[in-house]
Image 1 (cartoon, rainbow, N blue to C red):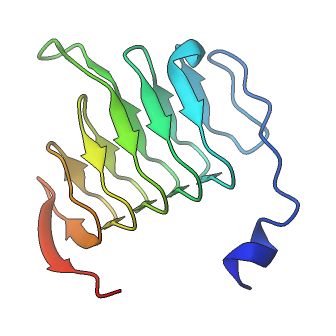
Image 2: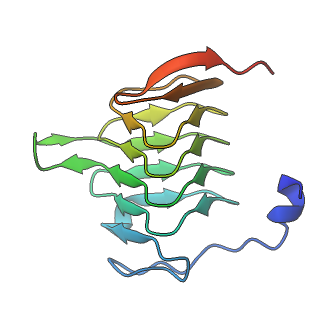
Amino acid sequence: MSQSNRFSSWKYPEIREGEPTKYNWVVQNLDGLQLGFATDIGAFTYINAKYGVIIEEAVQIGSHCSLYSLSTIDDKKGKIHLKKNARIGSHSTILPGVSVGENSIIGAHSLVLEDIPDNVVAYGVPAKVVRSIDG
């Protein structure tokens, strides 16, 4: 199924503060979330948007991911920005102040501690760029 067909009837999900959506993902600090068109967020994903989370259009986030704009362990805080067409693999964690570039792919079970540029594949703990994506 092509992306255009898959999202032809996409609608913004109903999101309530701290409550699971009908797709079973949760947002805390909802006022800090900017959600783009045709996004796909997997079940059991947690988003803390206290210091801002921008998810641009056509971003896919796998199940069981965590996006933290605030880390209470080391007191870091900062906006997370997932750019257009980024893909985040299941069970990945993105920490405060990180951007994931346009068309980039983060492999499953990755810990993203620093910015990932456009058009690359990155994975690991911590996530590192392993190759470019040829257009």
